[in-house]
Length: 366
Image 1: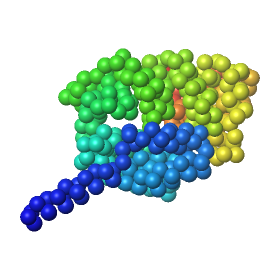
Image 2: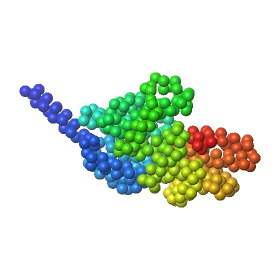
Image 3: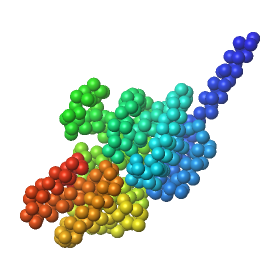
Image 4: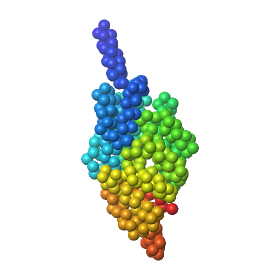
């Protein structure tokens, strides 16, 4: 009898633990809150975003989502987030806690999908942070787990659309990256093959059907079009969607401005440039300086003013580290063109080489 009672108690405790793990997939009202929080975060309305995040945290303190959202708020509020900033420790700690909480969700069949998702993307956003800051070696311990979770996501994407993002990225990059960097072909030869066209189609699906990763899906589609497809028109379409929805986001604004300038669309570029508020911080100053220097050179024809601006860009970009390498490349290419016009071909080639060292974007270095 005592064994029966003990067994019933264990079953009861297990049932209670399972029920306490709320699945957002069963709660459209909570997913609406998540989407609202993300929109406010990417839109740089951080006070309102934090209110939504705290509501979810108070209602579901055991769920990884509120920690994931809090980390994203910190990331964008302090963009560009570098390891030197104290907020980077908060960001990394929250994503790590998100991964730890995801493990409990993976032990429950009812919440397994969300467990795998937050385990994968808690690690993935840490990896993106380190990669953007030029320290990819920091993510080596997580690569095996991320690879296994990504492969598992192939089978779960029909049940949880967020996995279309990771599946699409994998299918595209596992083929495109070694093509662009042949030295890595031996390293990926033992991994599951991909399909670039299928990857793009899956990213399109993610853009239209995800909640957590909708913005990231559009952003990565933009970067793919710039870096690998070399299609500025397509990149412009996607980044314009982000800018239209989140006009205060300085990163999106800077990327849009960069594309417009390199398409010689100076009328639209000037409209975007006017909206860049240099009082928002040094990153905004860098974006505005880049736009002014480029227009001085290409639109106004004032090389002296442009050269001054390009030199300022290099100095500003240095303060942000690798995350601002695109702007550093733009600065060096501007100086290269000016040097070439001044008959200083050796200096022009030197600047062009330096620009190539800081970006793979051919539309900048061509």
